[in-house]
Length: 227
Ligand SMILES: Nc1ncnc2c1ncn2[C@@H]1O[C@H](COP(=O)(O)OP(=O)(O)O)[C@@H](O)[C@H]1O
Ligand SMILES: [Mg+2]
View (cartoon, rainbow, N blue to C red):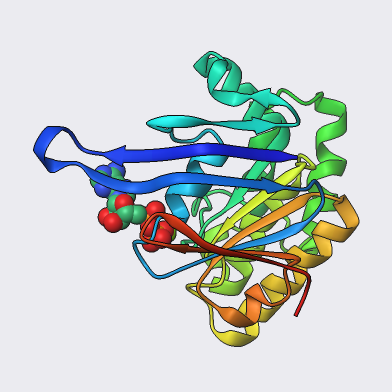
């Protein structure tokens, strides 16, 4: 479970401060699908970054399975994150000059996964996103949809328990966007990972089991149950 308590984020200092998140409280069940919805600038990405420990709150706490992540030292948060969480961003976050294999291998190297296990894990992840025929292709040669699938493969190779996706279809046409969403929901089922998607697309949100509506840094409402 992810428990967010009285979370506030204020950017800037003194007379130029901006309150991006204001006293956010929420609980997210393990293995659920969650959407964070709201207008541009409402605080969606900030909330996601703080829930994952990528950014620090001004006040408040985030507990993951009972562990207060900001009570940990920075290095420990980093290790905790790389063992449990993964990210997919709007801009296809891949190394253009590396092959698909090398791109997916990277998180395993960072997490120091045993060398003998790595190859099969990379191939399994590429298979899961339907890119097994592109193992040795350079990422720069892929289409936009393929690059995003590669980013998803990289995000799941470590079998995360939480998968965060920040507007993952924002740079894709609707056909490739649908493909990515089917893939992410499928991974929620097959890996059993909690899926947290930032989106302003109501069609995506209606497929999630919990919808968190954010307005001006505050929770405007939480809806549960698929529509
Ligand atoms: N590093 C930063 N410094 C100052 N203001 C920021 C910073 N990051 C985000 N903001 C501001 O905080 C608000 C929320 O940003 P963000 O969480 O990115 O919104 P969203 O993802 O909903 O579009 C925006 O008004 C944005 O300009
Ligand atoms: Mg954002």
